[in-house]
Image 1: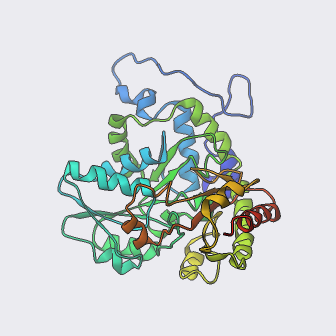
Image 2 (image 1 turned 90 degrees about the horizontal axis):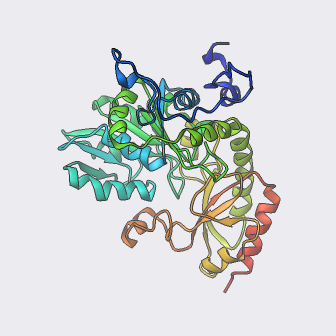
Length: 387
């Protein structure tokens, strides 16, 4: 069967498998060696070596991940930030300027703020998420646009086709963090985006036990990123690569269940009188619901909500039983996060205020449990935390 004719769920299970030619096992074998022979004559970087991102498990899993995002090639890193920082730095030089979406993951924003000035790289944060907010920031030395949709933590939506069109008209690349959607719910390359990034720690790993990152693009763009990646040394260990391949086999069914739960929970939470606002692109009340519907396969398993002022956030977090407070997201278990003190804690109060990240905001990563049980736990924790 040709790769292009395979359905997504089939790709999750079978694309990028390593055939066990010795024992015919149905699971990809694990190659743990860090040393392979080189007898001279050929390019040494064509021989397997972990830091070159080309050991057997790395190369085969990269094929699976690239296939899921409809890209030509992929690389796997030690973390999402390793993938993000390496991919950006491989595409900029001193004197270049990039446009950065204002509403992005706090770690990425901190990377831009703390590292770019050291290398003479210019940047501008957008004033909003309308396509014109991106085009307004483009300058003569602009080389790229960095975006994230749905955004972390407020699930804001960017029109991918419009922004990618603006970028192409100005001869600049586009790069997106697609972690919140996962390849199940959104494929940015299909909408004109050049480079797609994932914190594979999240949905691709899916069990809260793997740290990894991934970047997907064309062969030529991945080769450019690889040239920097070999210098920065952010390759993932082959054992973790093997675990990640195992996890991706169930990606489709996990994310589908999480998404279905989230759509139901969003409506239930939206009707909860102790919650002032729910941020979920699947709700018709979401300001960018129609854009999300046009570019996403489904609305995903992430949402946020603002507790009423009379609900104590810390008491709420302590009162949860089934749902767990956690720093990360997208595992099979439902978790909550307090962005003001965690994912966006490095931002100033003014920066959080501009983005709308308040002191009552809770980010919810919906798991695969029964949505009734999830809601019951959230509701009892809220009621027990009313002052």
